[in-house]
Length: 430
Ligand SMILES: NC(=O)c1ccc[n+]([C@@H]2O[C@H](COP(=O)([O-])OP(=O)(O)OC[C@H]3O[C@@H](n4cnc5c(N)ncnc54)[C@H](O)[C@@H]3O)[C@@H](O)[C@H]2O)c1
Image (cartoon, rainbow, N blue to C red; front, side, top):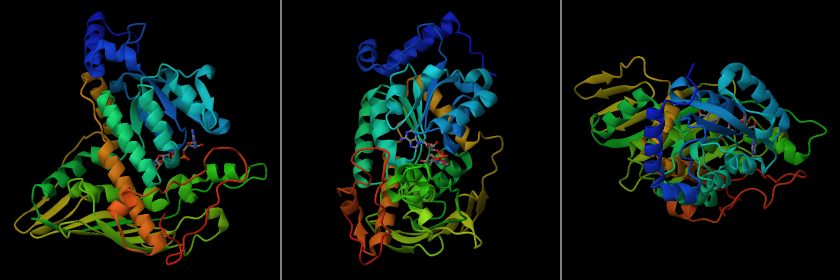
């Protein structure tokens, strides 16, 4: 258990010095509201959780691991019942590291704004992806350090907004650590680094599989408006989740992007549909996608994802090179002359590692900003969705620059957002 008492005078001075560097200068700290040190002299960082679901609960645990010297002090969820369940769970699990009183619990579409007015140093953004651009921008404006779950948007307008916000965060020396967790997995890091260093020659093709079963559905109740049903079952509505190619397959597409040095593909085409999960309660998303992405140098990525029960499942990244091949999740490289596999033991779990990196960066004053790759991998997934929805071949440029913006102009309980199922050959790209 972390010692949560105020730090010694020496540590306090050191922390004050480091956070001044972090803020650029005392002047900047005052002007921007970037936290320096708490009034009680403690260097224990305060964390606020926005989106108290499965991942939010997990992220709160990861963020408050002993070595981070952090406590959870504020929580926000759209729904009071979700917040209460999470608070109970976290109080039991985190014990004194959960210091959330009733005055620091916020609900509703604007609840996050109230949370950002509290004295939290770090926010964990774990709501459905639709809300990320707005919540990220407000968090940076409020001078908070950020753990930002993937994906970061559901449409190109959101992606461009996040890129701008991340530039602002960089200028203000605020941390943005992405929840694309494989980037923080030691074995995956080592394997990708070796492939990038030429262990299998030049990459010719990448083959991504994320073939998996079905996910949760939270039901429908008579006293829920359609908008409430959509928000509670957000996975199934493209405006909220981006569809499963964006919400889940992004993990694999991000590894393909990483293997290509974070340079985006130039064009894509694909096929997809909704073959099994056809009940209206499953909103408007597809249940399978296959996309062929192509880079400027001719490298291709063949990307398959499916959420269907009772069929062949596999999640793996296969890389084919001019002098061998690799499997990223297996940490395996089969070069022409030698075979290598990662043998590391005792590495931190990737979900902890991303938070160790975040809290170390806050304290060292050397900010992390994962903004570019988390935005590009989100756009890569959106490109894949749109080529399947429309049946057209589309370029990165077209999708990146488009005015597509999903969701309502304002959030209110009532009829919900009209969510049509895309039909290739009929649906046009906005
Ligand atoms: N990195 C990973 O491995 C990983 C794993 C799971 C989920 N995720 C991501 O984390 C995010 C959350 O997923 P989850 O599985 O926790 O979903 P979840 O439904 O369990 O949790 C989301 C919570 O956010 C709340 N919410 C919805 N709209 C909100 C709003 N406007 N303001 C505040 N709260 C709001 C919901 O009520 C819910 O409690 C998603 O972006 C998902 O893709 C990442």
